[in-house]
Image (cartoon, rainbow, N blue to C red):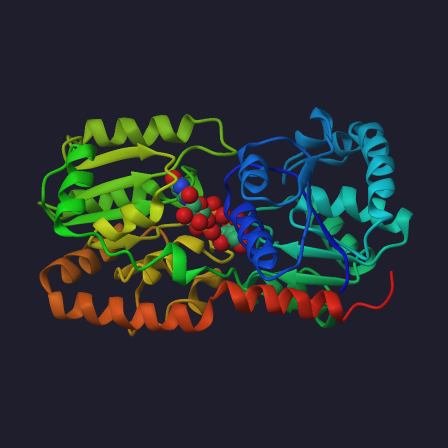
Length: 389
Ligand code: UDP
Ligand code: GLC
């Protein structure tokens, strides 16, 4: 059995990190230890250790962690010295492993150099759509260079993510797709009873009216403002907005809080902050919405809503079309179209048969396609297929 080591830069609760947590824990329960090196400390590392997995931090230092998707060449160069130091430490760590796998962009660069130094096969898991919408030209070129020349294989989280990288010059024959996988047996399907629903809505300060839930990081491109605009158009519809401004400065969060106040929606729209019980909350709402205003690379929250047997309305684009087959097992709206979102929500809350049909078809789709067993097996196939550095 090959010895695999994962490296990722952040240990906070983003989708890419939760993907990593789930595959590491599932691999472990099926007898394979996949240790993780984080380049900065955070709660996800603690969760993994608490669950019995092997995780540690090799700190990358502030200069490196400050680098962003839009960083220019000067900022990248100023981080060089710290990169050199951490690469040396990592290369030493890598000696004991057969395959090194980076789960983020920063770890692609840093672990990629270290893997080259240690002469180990290197895999990059790509969780983003590498496009000119979200990356500077220098960053795109660097990502494509590393993907093509420093990896043995690239794993994309959707065909959309694979295609975007290929469009920028990535070599298609190096890239396979492994979807996020979910443990449907233990984490889902605990449909809330009427009493659970009343309790959770009561705790949120809402009444027993139809409720939509939006789950995810509070960030402009996640489009929480689109949901607020749509809710304003549907009288007697309430909303919970769940998540925190992870990786952001919080100014967008302030804006949307003010938006709710200004539109007198405070009694109908509640912010619940970051929650660890997303599945329970999903089970209490009538609709799960996804409102990203840019193409979503994959969209875990969409699968989670469908797995919880909720009707899901999502933004068309990116990997979302690989999850939802509109209008069979979910509804797709154009990015930013709050009118269409309002109409779709109105249709669902007034047509129980439609809501149940979507929910059931959604459940069937995701449980058949996005299991954690399949993701771990697909990843293992990639690792097993590698022969050389
Ligand atoms: N999530 C969570 N608590 C929250 C908000 C979100 O645990 O308060 C989880 C959510 O269940 C999902 C992940 O964060 O698993 C978000 O992943 P997604 O792929 O939807 O978006 P990303 O943040 O990675 O862009
Ligand atoms: C990234 C993407 C998100 C995806 C997640 C897991 O954070 O933004 O769309 O679901 O990674 O692959």
